[in-house]
Image (cartoon, rainbow, N blue to C red; front, side, top):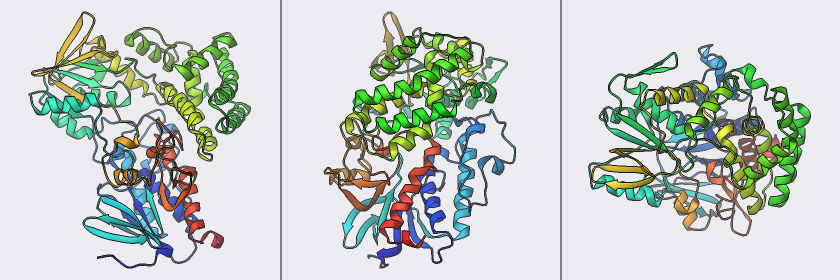
Length: 549
């Protein structure tokens, strides 16, 4: 039975992880002191509301944030009584530490509880998955748990990364594992993987992916099984696999972030440099791909040269220009050496023992300019061609800007030194399925494994989404890609746009599934930034409530 409420002041939010929480806080901040609260139905079956799966308070302590405590700037809205993450923790984290993701999840749960207690929004929580979203007279209707809900004047989707159909390789491996003794597991939840790994003592384990998730998986397979790291060495418990083989397409581990606030401060841009980059990004999103590249490179290069000279390195300006030019067309091709050499170089730079390379310097600057990147990019809608170019540049630099803690890279080195981890086959190996698992090979080198752990996050490809309600919205043509290789086309306030560029009033989408319309979404800070504010302002404007504020 359809429930009956006025659509004039009733909205729905689908998904209540950090991004959904940030959007609701933005809405509440605008409505504070306005009398009767707005009615909001929130749909999410996941029990850790506000935290979501990525920051599940029940997750293993082996899963760490990749942001040092000193850089976690999510202080909450003015009305929040929780304060910032640091105040809430009560001094339990050192500035240069990387806290467990579960700690942040508990903080986000507290933020949501505070929002509910303050009563700034009239919220109803439904622990249900939404199956369909349909246009109806005067709004939108949802179907969840066998019941129709609505109509709603506004619907916001903050669903993160829905399930997708597996790629050809993974699909074949799934069939193989189902028909043999081979074991195929996903990286998360890590607490589940930790329990599974108790049966892998003495076995060969491969890890698909050599990015941040690989470090979580390595801890699951080592300290999660009772081993420990001390003074640069790994002391096994005896319950670990016999050998662990991570691999990826390029086989290059990401570079760790600077170890301390003092080392990190050396990469801080000058105000004039930030102004130049912000202006370049704002102009680049309106330019051609070639024009965008030229504008961004011209703003980046002088800051990189200044910082490198301050570190005692003096590359010719032409070398920086050439590095940047290559980065736009073939990211990562500038780095030479095998995986172990790249790992060791990254550790030395992050520890302040070696001067930074061009790439490391540019990557740290780009990390510090992420908010400027979002401000210039997300408030506009670049052409698909320009969007692809800037996205590719940002994604490539993530090997520096989204790097792991130095401690994680040192742990990987310790595991290499003791022979538990093997990187000889890490660069795009040939992989053959066998009766009991897989054989990885490259040239004359080969290794057999009976367990494969998938640590690769799928791209936000709309055509591969198999979970509703997104799959249904894509199939019906309501949600369309901004262009080939990009995700959903949305306006700056999150409003979904059709293939003619017209907004669908009242249907909004924030986050990863809008990549291309927005940028740098795989960040906690983006969940509590201007994207949520723009959405809230758009909602109140469409409801005719903005004039009251």
